[in-house]
Image (cartoon, rainbow over all chains, first blue to last red):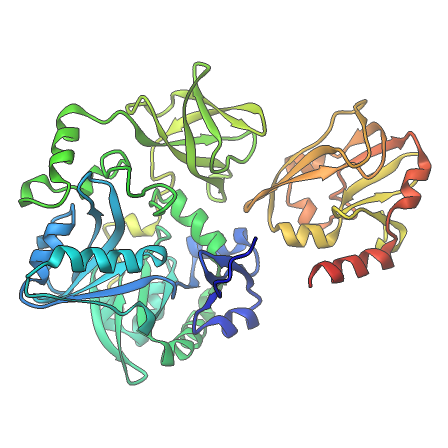
Length: 376
Length: 128
């Protein structure tokens, strides 16, 4: 049965179709799953440059004297790391330390933050922030409907920015700069979901098609290609990035997801902190664990076995174009499986040999300490 | 090996090149819809297949697809090249990317399948 809800289209919809995008319904958004093919797009991003329409992502602005206080209360990470011009990846935690969402909180100024939230959770996040704000001196605004967003990703992308936005090349990873583009106020951050160096631009709908065309033109020497959700998923999974709703949710905690580095227990109180203190002291019973296999392609929901005993199932899994084998992550018990431990994954009723693998499965240029800073 | 006009097609997008040793594969339309093929699981030589029953699996990056035998019979050969290089299904579905050969137990079965014109019409209808 199809529901009566209408599918939402981004401001780039027509451009995506003209570029040959195979459009699909992604959580109520019509977005391209692929253009030239997932493998080609994946390779373009790993080796040179690719561009994505990520306008479904949400933007929540938190401003006012208590903006920092509100974000510090609602996040597991320490917002003190986000000084003006910088952002932090963080988990917004509920009372049980489950995740309301995983986000990037950018500090634009001491009293002004831009929070990039997931598409499916933007309303939930906005309401959560509002509810926690209580009597704080803070304004929370969900501006997700006002902005489009593109991601330009790949090792050659910084070179495209030499003329376009040299100031963006001075940004560290997770840095952000505000800049007028085509007469509109925009945000350029050195972030992404691919594991490669690159940028994301948050801009009003009115200029997003101009920006897209401009990026395609600047990327021509590097063979830039439009990329869809398919490549976005293979790239992010190889990079060990979490997908909200699949890998993390309101129930699983940050420690269980293997993202302990996000938790800052010493920053002071925050929602869900006590649960995380206990988990830190006593350990977790299950942990999101990576595996690789060669005899097939693992998929979400595949059961995982250790010594013949079921120990979990895969939350995300796919074929890794870089490793040329199957990769997946799933919550497994015991939580302390060592890389190399032999496992089995059930694919269509057959047990296929697998082994525990370290995540990220692949480290692209985003993991490099040495980012391109512009023509010297 | 085969021209699209010489083949018969199923509603599940397999083709068969009829003959004493019939060749089975997936249509160009099917490979295009699946996207990049990265894994193929074939039946075994000597295996008896039944018409419209799953007999092989083709996996693209996106998803897994069951392959249904267009006719009943015994597998006489499999294309080992596609297990080593699954991309052959995308590059050359009707030639280098064939899946297996089968000795039909009831050659009349293939007569009931769609010819090229009917299949093209079927694909067009399905798009609406």
